[in-house]
Image (cartoon, rainbow, N blue to C red; front, side, top):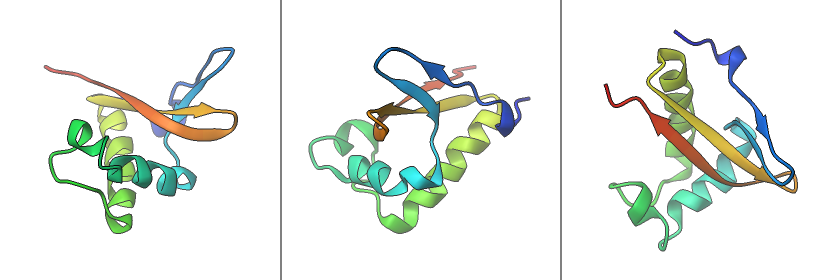
Length: 89
């Protein structure tokens, strides 16, 4: 079982992959509410501001359980997207 404090941080010359933080909430919500993007990301339609906090907490819980990891993609010190890996077992 993982611990939230040992979330892996990966850095390349252009990107930082890190835990999605509460400070990312508005940019994350905008991504999940973009009408050209959300059909590929979520079945429930655009995400509201009220739902995004729950989603961030769920992502953290999935990491702690060892069943998924959600990295924020940071470029030029701003959230530009995310990538997720799920354990299918």
